[in-house]
Amino acid sequence: MPDPLMYALDAVAYAGIFGMLSLSLNLEYGYTNLANFGKVAFFMVGAYVAAVMARMKYPFAVYALVAALVAGFIGLLTSLPALRLREDFLAITMIALGEVMKLIVKNEEWLAGGVWGLSGIPPAVVVQGLSFRERLLVQIALIYGCLVACYVVCELIAKSPYGRVLKTIREDELLAAAYGKNVFRYKACTFALGSAVSGLAGALFAQYMGTVSPYMFEPTVTFSVWMMVILGGPANNTGAVLGAFLVEGFHRSSRLLKDYIGLPLDPINLQVMLTALLVITVVFYRPQGLLKERITPLDRGLLKKLKPMYRRVKTWVRS
Amino acid sequence: MGSILNTDNLVKRFGGLTAVDKVTLNVEEESIVGLIGPNGSGKTTLFNVLTGVYRPDAGKIFFRRERIDGLQPHQVYIKGLVRTFQTPKIIQKMTVLDNVMLAVRNPGESLLAALFRRRRWIGFESRLRERALEILRFLGLDKHAYTPASELSGGQMKLLEIARALISEPKMMLLDEPTAGVNPVLAYTIFDRVEELRKRFGITFFIIEHRIELLMKYVDKVYVMHQGKLIAEGGPNDVMNNPDVVKVYLGSV
Image 1 (cartoon, chains in turn brown, red):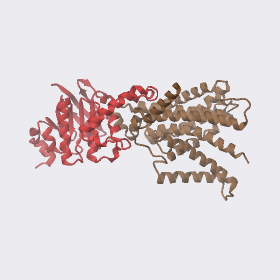
Image 2 (cartoon, one colour; image 1 turned 90 degrees about the vertical axis):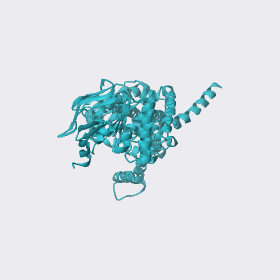
Image 3 (cartoon, chains in turn cyan, red; image 1 turned 45 degrees about the vertical axis):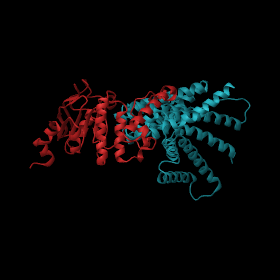
């Protein structure tokens, strides 16, 4: 029987990493209606870039940045042909991309260890003399620092004229084009940014796990992230993070279930069934997700809230 | 006054169907020109070709003496040629105000400015808001500025479309059935506003309309389209007495 607290802390760390993926998909799907079903590909690219660089003893800040940039760049490259496709075809293409990337990593052994993956990745922050549990808390602090940064970026985008253009594109591409927006450029830009955030999540994941292998990057990762966004509420950043917590919590608790109740059927199957049931229930009874998209003018959103806060901090620093 | 928009033998085909067939037209600056014709005669397709939604198969389009055929819709918009849509394209999940403001090119629409150089666009945004409110007041929508656009009536949505087209200070507006589904009183109000805008700001209008009696009270010139071709042009009286036009609308007698 594992230490329940450790199990919970591990779940919290996972939820933080997946929260970033969920935020990035929300940016692409929730705000821009880009059905990116290849999320795992960019997550994997980030993780592998980070793994290789961390083993070469680069500091976290450097490899996290490079991982984000490489994933973002690959996102941009894929978007150039893929974004010309209609929504459903884009989804299919992106699923294929995720699989292809995984197969490349699996089969090209010289590149990143092939099926064996890479292990011995040092954690980002090494403090001597900490217990295992304390090291886990340091990890959680790092992951949540990055999550908050991503959340702020996504909120700033959502509450800016840029975000307004994204929503326009989501609702009606022809309208956006007829009113002077270069739709393709906005889509490509958003796709690249979403991929970069996924790459950063991948870098955190690699150093947290200490090892990466192709088997960690199955399409189910993508589907989990989709579930998070759909449950939490598309076009609501708080909802995206909430969805990540719910889905991760649901996964973990249904896995624990098998230790406490005797079931006539395989608990793994039960978990899949319950997950499906959860998604169907939410889509049926609350299609807009748990947290609805808010219709607020820009000036009444984050900006109004942040400005007095900023002033207070400023006077406080001076005094 | 010179011409602001003219086309030369414009053709658009869809498979075997020629939706726009050798259309040559000329719109004078600061005029109000109507475009009428039975359903399916190619009026909206012509608008789509003019604004770059479809690429013409042949022919040229000049806007203020500049070729604009082959340009993308957003490039046409930047030249000052703005259109509205037959079924209002209103973003339901935005306020009425944001629906208007989205039409303007804004320094905050670049990703970097949205994240880092917020000072640059926050001032612009608040000036833009004032202008948007002024336009909404002009069209009688200012009471609804902060309500979600989904709560507007059909007629108000038509007005919102016009407000959105106006805010970018266009040189010319293409209105696709601005009074479809609008009650008669509001329909007159819409055309009164059009007239006023032409006088005050010198905007040229090219209007598709099915309410012919209404249209005829305001236009300087009318084009009649039938099966992709322009079959008549001229002042309201000339066109209405043209036997071809009567035939198209009422069938052969």
